[in-house]
Amino acid sequence: MQFKEIEAIKALFKEKYKAEPIVVRSPGRINLIGEHTDYNEGYVLPAAIDKAAYLAIALREDEEIHLMAYDLKETFSTHISNLKPIGDVSWPNFLLGSAAQFAKKGIKIKGFNAILASDVPIGAGLSSSAAIECAVTFALNELLQGGLDRLTMVKMAQKAEHEYAGVKCGIMDQFASMFGKENHVLRLDCRSLAYEYFPLKMDGLKIVLLDTNVKHSLASSEYNVRREQCEAGVVLIQKKYPSVKSLRDADLDMINACIPADTLVYNRCKYIVEEKQRLLDGCAALEKGDIATFGKKMFATHQGLSKEYEVSCRELDFLVDQVKDDPSVLGARMMGGGFGGCTINLVKEEAVDDLIKRITPQYKAAMQLDMKSYVIALKDGTSVFV
Image 1 (tube, rainbow, N blue to C red):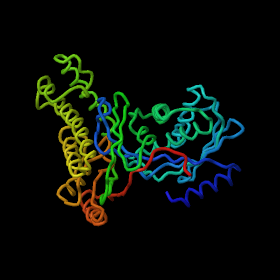
Image 2 (cartoon, rainbow, N blue to C red):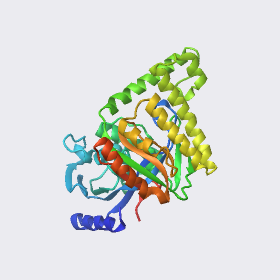
Image 3 (cartoon, rainbow, N blue to C red):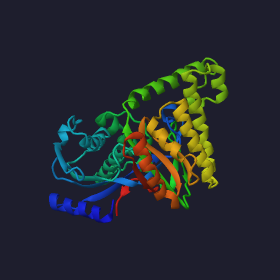
Image 4 (tube, rainbow, N blue to C red):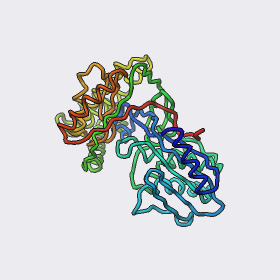
């Protein structure tokens, strides 16, 4: 979002509410590698991006809440005493759910006015909802002088998603939005919530997202099935290795010894264990500045997600197939839960425009769908916009 647009939002706020707001910027996120590992207590490798939610906000003297979605040109109002999920309009829930968490923390909440704007694409798997939740939580902590640390705010934003949006998400999205660091990825241990930054040296390279523009209905139901299959694998492993609490603790030898080969459970568990190691090896490559090796890990991840974990789809596979033999693309894979959304690609800077021009009509011809594309950079996490 351009600076002049943010200034326009501030001007609108002052005109509409007769008050000077603070503006909080909270980014969307990508995940470079480590997919479906979060609920297996493994690692993920997300990063905050240069597309973000912007929230202009100021407290009121009463207990009313007045919200505006700048991009949608919609408004919503309620009272603190009536904080609850809204069934007929979705966007207020991200703000109201975040506000409700302060009362649960014993922090007295006041009425407020807020204008929300965002350039995080909706439905592309970039966590637009987490960006909003983190923006509201961070802003209210500032205004109410709550003294909350970032990890506490991450957990509050996650609860807002659970309770008001009805999505039982993991913690990665909110964590990446709040803790992001410019030009770095963040290795998050989903068991302990310990984290470490790794530099992503993108000299001469760009991160390009190719959006399939689809989201198949299989996504939510198959997500639950994959969790159950992983848990079934753990039960089998525990018969011989009782110390194994999740697939985080397992290795390939355990899987080969305990789970019948050529079964779905075997394939699911094999992917998770190999993905855990791919992520750790990928981080070692990043420490050496070896993006080429990291890119190969991304291609291997997509192969595993498509053939062993079976959460890809023909649209995602098509986009990866179009770049796998292109020397200008160092790595590519599907990103997110699967069955739609984006592929993430590491592309030589001088080849980005030609790549998009080549694949866009190919995708249209093959899938009868328009492909969207986004060139992104890694930025800092949630902060007051100055």
